[in-house]
Amino acid sequence: MQKIKKLIKTLKNKKRIFIQTHNYPDHDAVASAFALQYLLKNFKIESNIIFHGDILRDSLQKMIDKLNIPILPHYKYELNDEDTIVIVDANKKNKNVTALKGNVAAVIDHHPGIEHEDLEFCDIRSDYGACASIIFSYFAELMLEPGREVATALHTGIVFDTHQFTRNASPLDIETVAMLYNVSDVNLVNSLVKNSIKLDDFRQYRYLLEKLRVKGNFAYCHFPDGCNKDLLAILADYILSAEEIKFAVLSAQSVEGISFCVRSKIPEIPANTAVQKLLEGVGSGGGHLDMAGGRIPNAKDFDQENIFRTGVAIANGRVKL
Ligand SMILES: [Mn+2]
Image: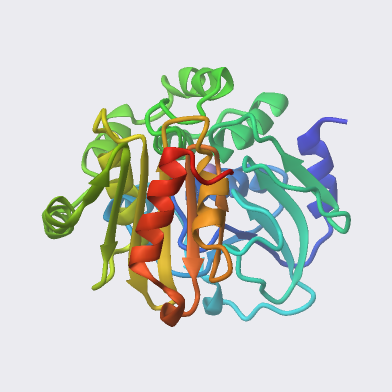
């Protein structure tokens, strides 16, 4: 049976359905939820899009506003045990997905992960650079055309998540965008991509350039006054754009302790194992080979010097990963 037919069958007779993105959703997560909602509606299955956390980037808020994406914080609905949840762009039991009331029936994700046995539907394809590409494959299976808004959202999600086809992009993502290209509002996509930061963010850029510590091919900076998670990721990519830097770590004070963003350009230093080594005993983290995130829940356990020393040792190959 086609994947999508199975999902539709799973959701057909459920009472209330919620499509939940990962916490602090990004463009890909919101686009995936929006497109899935549209697809289900075609089969007379109503659903609501929910998330936990905040919409951090103005660029994402602009996408939501311009495309009229009906996404709301989960507390706006009173979820109960009879509700059904579909998680997109993340997996059940992930640290970045708040467990809500209701039963998680389905997961659609492109991050490496396990298929939890209690799920009625699970579609994990880690060879895709964006969850939006997986969602579009359902449209293709059904020969269903996404409308202009949905096509624009999917197109934006793929471009952002693959960092304009430079990160984990597969031919599948490129083929998807090629198919969406004639339907989507390309000017809007380009404008969302090009205007991804605000003038006010330059304060954090200045701080970074002044305080960045570099040793060999390793770079580290801590933001004691905090830095929003999305901007931290943008700054980490920015540092890595320097040819000499191969491995970069940024950390920032946050309400949840200390947040980490790790980037690597070399296979010998997988970002996901490096972050675990860096936070060993005091926190946790995970992600991809080239990008990862982590957290030390208790700020008291954070030792900036130790992070720098460990980072240098990893970069030198003195610490086995
Ligand atoms: Mn994604």
